[in-house]
Length: 117
Ligand SMILES: [Zn+2]
Image 1: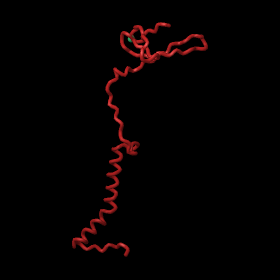
Image 2: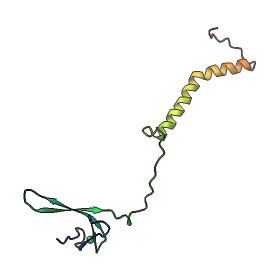
Image 3: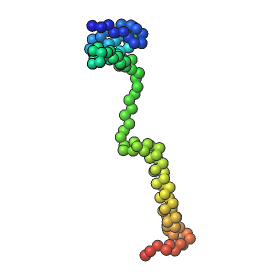
Image 4: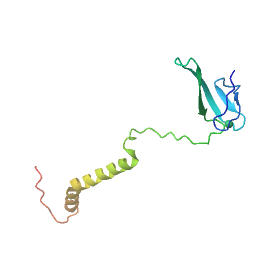
């Protein structure tokens, strides 16, 4: 078997006993996924090393799984803006009517609303 050297430090790579496709560098502890790519043109096997993130060295990144609300494409800010806009529109549309009603109910200025009877 061909000895594989670590691309980053030149140290010897050793087969991971837990994973036969993974070689671990003895010097820098980097892990590489080893793959031999057979080249038809040269008739040789070309070594393909891909560095693998070691699970142990993994920084504890907290995976935040946001709750699916169906509003993801809009973002919460746009959602809030839409709600605010909705209330503003409602205020513009119904504000005067509500005000009139209030005046009438409380014996204020009697406004003869020309609402259809
Ligand atoms: Zn190394």
